[in-house]
Length: 590
Image 1 (tube, rainbow, N blue to C red):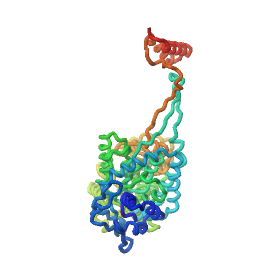
Image 2 (image 1 turned 45 degrees about the vertical axis):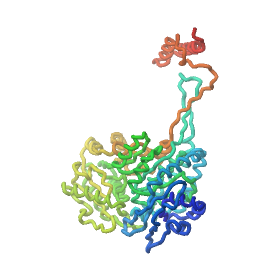
Image 3 (image 1 turned 120 degrees about the horizontal axis):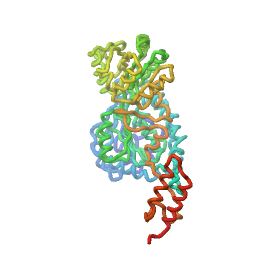
Image 4 (image 1 turned 90 degrees about the vertical axis):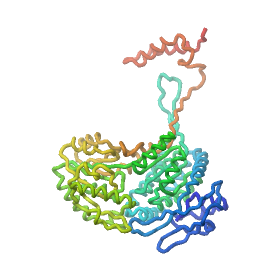
């Protein structure tokens, strides 16, 4: 385990002329601490404590070690890492010191000068090496993600690792075309000129990522930013720091140039300090509350941002839907990753004639689901203890207001201890006065409510401050399209859930409080670029018709525009006026 910030390692290794050795020793080790024990023991020796528990022993002060002008500060605090599924302590991570942040930015901006000038194809070679490395170490990565998040291993593989590798594949295939300068149409009024759009990398990109899908939601924006020619500073979530270290090690082993991609490990103070350093772009995925804070900071400095925030996604089941499929979709959409998905199905509206049948089938299937972390289990644990409290609060509020518990248990009966398993829960007799129907729950709880008319369910679905994703279930394609067109969300799936995020040809993002901006696909590359307009003239003519002098030109311009923009353009008259303007422009004022 890389228990020391990589910035520490690079700084100290540079001072000790060990950087090359460090790079070689790190090869092949995603979470193995042994690579740096011998080389780093003069600064921070590492030892193993029992069953996989790791710790970093720090000297009292780092002041004696200076790397590239940065004095390392004394560190007393470490990030303790506990498995949310077993409660065992699995590691301690030394956070990135706040004083090192200016140096991190300086190194990033220095690396940008060379990285941005590499041909796109050459940058993609690094991404390909990363992809092949991830394929080789897929099972090992899945183990890290599962252990750090508490999710079952198959979900780590299917929903975190696979989409990331697929994103790299998509970038490899499409980045050259998407980011190459392209010629665009030039209007007739600008005859003789040629127009192009060029894509210029922005500079240093700050990527702040969440804990629910700590691999995918970190790597996809990082990869797009790097492919577009930017350098990146990544701040993984402190809730799942082992995944952050795993990602860092992957980039190092793939051989990305020093400073191109750097990681800063720590909590909210670190995130705030990174944001205040004026990066050239901020990509944030997380809560609405934090997103608004970052948006305010960015606005003060006019820093462009993408904010991928929360959701309260509705599922609409019409009477002619395939109920078996709809129930199976609701179960997976609501309970995958223990409901900790911004695109989770968080409320289900079922047309009244099939409501009872849907609810009965949903209850039966819910009670048959397996919870744990073994290979045959369906639902893992919650990842973040604070989120357990939020889910409990929403559920208690609903029960106090008359909701009926169809499956699951009341929060007071949850057996937490040192683990964070919440039984999959189904609620009926709910309404929009309850928190469970209004606020993002982010847990394995599914409220179900009947509706009578299409107008009613559209109004209910849109009665939310969120608008990330939604689904419509019916065999009537015309009706599905009609309803989908009126839902105020960033995505709609018909007879499926969540799946739009897996198609990298589609944009991803939300409406209302669900965020600002879109990424994925070609757009996901271009958001990290300045779009630069280029117009070329051959330079042979000495003047232009709209340049000085204006003398005698007004009536010709008036006639020119009237003949051009009229319902029936008069091209002969247009040509004559254009030639007259050229003649007037070449003449000298008396």
